[in-house]
Image (cartoon, rainbow, N blue to C red):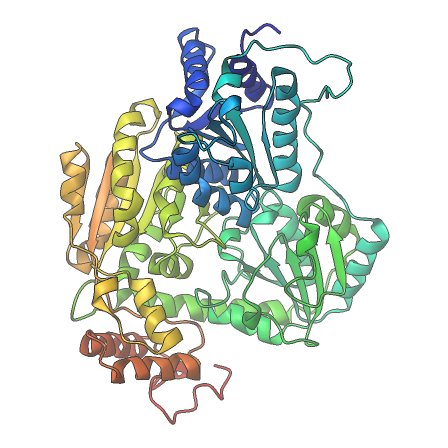
Length: 613
């Protein structure tokens, strides 16, 4: 071994696996590794060490790094307290199928099982979240544990955890030998560009060729296969729907791409699901079965690298275990070009109408505050080339889904199935570290901003000098409410909003930015939204746009069901504290839809649920 200690060896092995950046927080449980990282840095041989304000952010940033780059994200923290803090970010990686390796400290080997301070069973702690978790108990074992963690993370697209006891970190590194119980391992990753058997691909092609109304549902697992998805859809005469995390896969200018489906989706996407006779699911585990075709309506095909997720959401006929790009490359020569384009033309026509509707929604005014849609509309029309946009899982995600149209080369993401409000800022930071030359925009609610966003402006202040382009924009929707949860209380459970849980203390977010030396812009009039976006894009630095908006703008689904309507009425009858402005703003939103499908939808007796529209 050219290096001296097991910590030195680990650092070099990370480099062998292609790691150049780690998101880490120090502590005594991982102190020897921290010291080795410092020594390597002084020699000019270190890793890019990013230290945010909390260990949870380390793990979220590592997950985001994996999402935006396709590389393994790496995070580090000390023993029990730091390790526990990383769990949320690692669950984000687990549920969104991302390769992440977490390295966590541990007390010395002799302390294990003795109830020593900060000594806990970390293997048991991480057993549910990690595809592989193992403690390095000797220098000879280190290579095998590190290599297995990385190879497993890549092959299974899951987080893995290396537990690194403090005394082992300082032990002298050894070369594994050809001996009993010793594993000599490889740092070569497993190939994941899997192509299913050709006879199964032929079965899939026959189903698609026989279909008259084909729809593709595309998820984040199709990243890297943009051209193949578009070519296959063009041949099949198919419409395309993207899951929210698959938004960046298909450019918004593809006319038969109708964006998302579901509560955050479009009406043309809903109609595709209701009318298609063939459904091809590509790299997605879309979990909302109520928005998929009815059983027996459509013949189904699914392509995914996670075999346990094949056939899980819809009774598909053909399940192809494979990489989306590789599978489509093999499938495309088997597809017959459809001459009847009526299905696509219908989709394109509906999409044009939906875009007019979204513009109308963005331009309406509310009597009790700004329209949260407006800032997203103005941002979308001005997004620079190769921009990266993140959002949290509150109502921000609704406006992101409804109004942001990512063009080719742009990126956008959020925490998917974990749906954590915490991720918007760590995601944006990780994107900026990975692509420092690009403009990054974080869209975030005030509740999420108070959780992790405000402190992370300090991290940005610390590191922005390392970015070739320091432009970083944060748009805070300032409504003093946990708005998504408020609407869920009303429309899912029929409960009035309880201010004790929902109110968010009002803070001068632009002032906080100015205190740190950043540009702060306050938007208290919708007509100033465009100027605010233009000022932020013209500023070569960090800008926080503090957008004061109503808490009562309804995140209307594409179809307003009787359940949605009736629960809303129940909540109002039970004494919702914001009853009057909520009803007024809801009426404004419905009136501005501009079409008959939602007029009176909140009034009993109009039969909105009997009509598909």
